[in-house]
View (cartoon, rainbow, N blue to C red):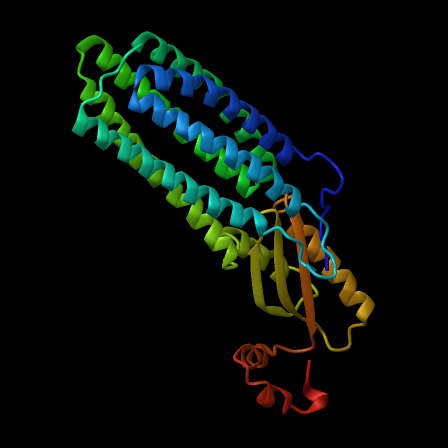
Amino acid sequence: MATLPFKIGEFSAERRATVVATSTATLLTIVKLIVGILSGSVAVLASAIDSILDMGISVFNFFAIKKAEEHPDEKFPYGKGKIQAIAGVIEGTIITLSGLFIIYEAVRKILYGHGTEYLGSSLGVMIFSILVTWLLVQYLLRVSKKTDNIVIKADALHYQTDLLSNGAVVLALGIVYFTGWDWVDALFGFGIGLYIIYSAYGIIAEGIMILLDRSLPSEIVAKIGEIISKHPKVNGYHWLKTRTDGSRNYVEFHLVLTPEMTLEEAHHIAEELECKIAALEPNKGWVITPHFDPYDDEHINEIFYDGKVTHACSVPEADQG
């Protein structure tokens, strides 16, 4: 019944963030690939592969967010917000595959003992990468905090893991530089691959939960229930259901009101509740759908939900809410 504004026809903060991330990933990819190929460092090459994936993912995220921001239409009355959750699952899957590739390269280096060259250049490019990635992470975290967008949160998390993996690469190259132990480079590459796979799990899980219409966080649901129950003209409520598509929150509930109340008064009560609920997360869009009951008919809702419509509709017409 109520929804806060969609971003239509404008270059939103979320899309700007994906453009910045794509540009950064492109720069780092070029630099890392050149040095990684010349030096033969598995750790640097692994980081370069990760940057290539970052670039592709950020481009994909741009179009996913663009689609998600489209206004609902006749074919998609709830909008296309879940595209962002799909993007998160795809991003997490690609990150997992990149982790597996890095592990493969690390094992290959351990088995065949390829040496690492141009250590000074490799260290320099990785330190440069850490600095640029840190600046990007700070920017993405600001956008993520402002918009609470799952795609931007996933991107921020991904680049945070890049920071850690790049730090591990610098440490590995430093050890190789001072000791000549090339196997350390492969060992750190193996560890980075495992960590990347681990970090991807959270992104995939979050996207799947949104696609499965998981309810909003329990603390938000509790606050919604408190807002409804504290209204002086509400006799009770039931059938409170919530979900999110990543950008907008959806809330449904049944209000138990005095039977003699006018429709206009019930409407005003609903608007008051909607405004208070939407204020819980002002950066999100909200679609709030109340239903008015003259008495608590939760058992009838359960019957409908179970598909036993015949039993529900057998209630005398005068007694139905």
